[in-house]
Image (cartoon, rainbow, N blue to C red):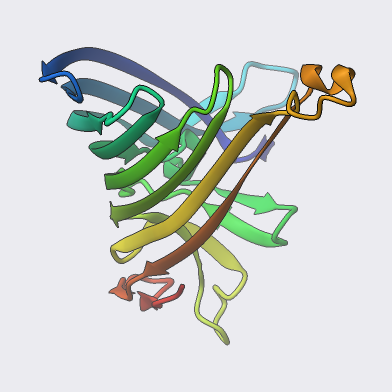
Length: 238
């Protein structure tokens, strides 16, 4: 007989409702605010099929089965001040969420050809919640053009990372996703989209647009004690 536990059936479903309201305060200030409510369900069934002789149907042994549902309230607000029609100053806040992939919660071992390691899902993995803060300056020189500069900061709670087993142990080549210590990402971003119609000696350039953006980022993940059979902690890193 032949058996393997590297099998799973899984599904996910999302129900969501969203409401957004825009309020004008005078002629230059707008406030766009709202919220999204989500009900997200994941189901997983890890099983071992055992194939018998004589081409009989396999026997299925359930190793892990479960369903979990998460409810999330995700508010947002965006304040826009426009001193002139072609310029915007924006300040925004929003809550978002990152959910684990189905393979990351399926508790069976699989070989990863990219990292040359054994990976196993973690059925206790939680979703990551994020608080997003943004400031942005926008200038629209003409239709289809923009020059913008922005700064952002993201607080990430329970970020999901793959951790490797402790060096010198049997689990050194073993990786599993865990909820690491709280983290942040902050940075600056610039964006440019400009037509080339100002070069009058070459009229055909008026049909071309130059665009691009650049970002400067910094991130940090705090140390977190794990203390399970495979890891003692997830270290701080940037």
